[in-house]
Amino acid sequence: MAKLILLRHFKSQWNLENRFTGWVDVPLMRADFEIPALDFDVVYTSPLIRNLHTVLKVFEKKDKYPIFRHFKGKMKNWTHFEELGPDRNNISNGAGQNYIQVFVSEALNERYYGKLQGLNKEETMKKYGKEKVHLWRRSYNIAPPGGESLADVVKRTMPFYKKYVEKD
Image (cartoon, rainbow, N blue to C red; front, top):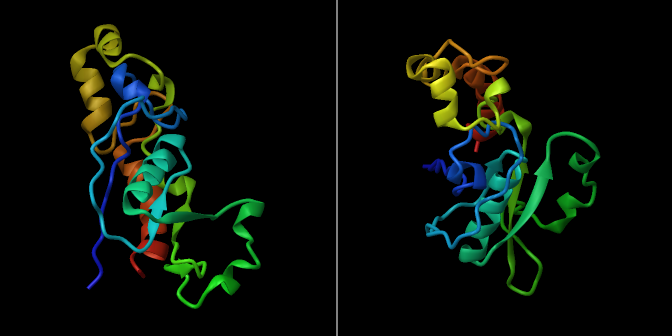
């Protein structure tokens, strides 16, 4: 039976600064992270650098190498990729180095926080009120200004999950 592991990106610089991040492409903070020992044979991630960097750190601990596959743009068409091996999720280059596919899609981006992106959370609570900010962050159907509600995130991510992840 297949097992699904959900891994959030490691702490970003804006997490450290207590800012709403959303789709702003900020890096991980500079730190040594406790990296879990995970057993997996395929990865799905968003293209945000903090997520890709987290994937690379986990792969480094696992002593594996990612092959990034994209769902959009010219990079999605790798005509030679199928020739790399019969088991595309565990490709060996003949020298014992294993590669694991990492599928990259914007459909997996975290919640889009709209006009809150980049703002300090404490300052935002002072400006709009703690209850209002809590409502924007935690209610299912209410979005922050110009952003996505949690319901919007589900509408964006579930079709991807059903089409690609569920089948694996």
